[in-house]
Length: 333
Image: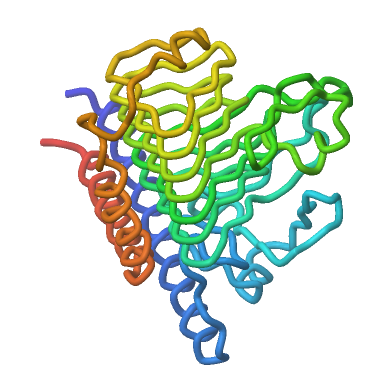
């Protein structure tokens, strides 16, 4: 019998058990603090609600923040400092947080999340991303505003599971890069344009836009209102008009502009303006009413998910994981 091996396994089991008990004590202490805060009239912010940063499974109130760490000041887009959005570091995970400072993105900002938006705890929103009202950001969706910025997702839109929004850098050592931003109405900007810094967007997603599972929007990109982007489709360096339907696994790139009301068939690759201009109309296509149906579902999801207590669900998941750790670390006969 290998007594040395048994001793090591037993030691690991003791360490794991001690860690789990410490985590459980921490959770008990946390919920006592939460109840105390409720007694003082401090409300728990909704996931993705205005005036708060989503903290995964932890309370993001200023009072609780002060019990765990000193305040972290974050810069707004205009460079001013603001501590209204607090996030708890080092306990649980922080799925909504500021970007890092780089040579191509010198201002550190936090995401802007409007009221009634819903950011799932397993979604990630970083840096200079604006998430509008009634936007549903599903599990594993990512808005990463740490390279090309800003990114703007407008009211009523949805980012379904696995959607990625990101953009090429818009500046290089302080110099604006031509063609890397659009205005809110879809005009592509040169770096010398006076509107580039304050009125330009690396990615603009209009109102009531559906970004289906696994689609990628990589800036520079502009998508007009009431458009639909199908599963696994990719849009890079392109403009998509209003009321456009993009089919499953389509690719649109090369600086093209898809006119309003067009249909991009599934799997179609559009790399020239001639190809874009030759596209059929959305009306009469198999995707004619797709976006309406998808919006109906996802706007309700955004509203209803805000009503449930995800923190309890996540805590239960953590306890199940801890139980599994304990069982697998125990020595077997």
